[in-house]
Image 1 (cartoon, rainbow, N blue to C red):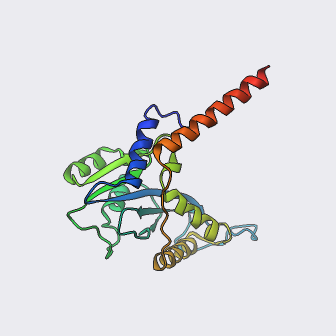
Image 2: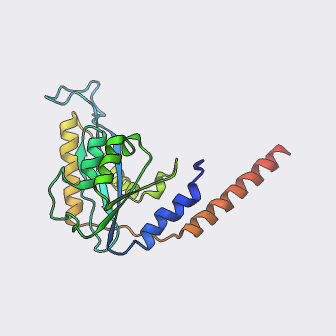
Length: 216
């Protein structure tokens, strides 16, 4: 449950982007799949691997929702910084034929991570007015639809795989991303903001009733 004082406002904002995106705009969900561990479950010790001393890596993946539907131009990254966030938003880190047309505004759904709010980010956004950030509520990452795609990455690839080093992990993840992009399976958001808030209200009511009954 979110304790964000602007929770209701943010639910309406983000769900509104999914169900009725603005005209001449592209909505992108951006988040980082962090702490992907390069672990060999059968080996007592991690084998040495050249130039890959860390045992974790991250993937940054924007997912587009407004027409035309596209797959997530995800990429692997070993670090997180405001520069990484800027490059992920602008697409400049990896040239792509999916570069959004200049006439489209870009609405980015992202979490409250500190790197999204640094002075460098604010300066960059001021110089690029077609970019608009929409922050998910505190403890409300489930509102970011790219988390659903991360679930596919975890269940279909990471959970059943082992890696002796980070380099092999990154290579395998990127290969899985490329295969997904060759045959994308878009996700569609269906719940309205009012439906979500109503379900949460009913859940809170049931929890309070159970607590009151247990006290008696």
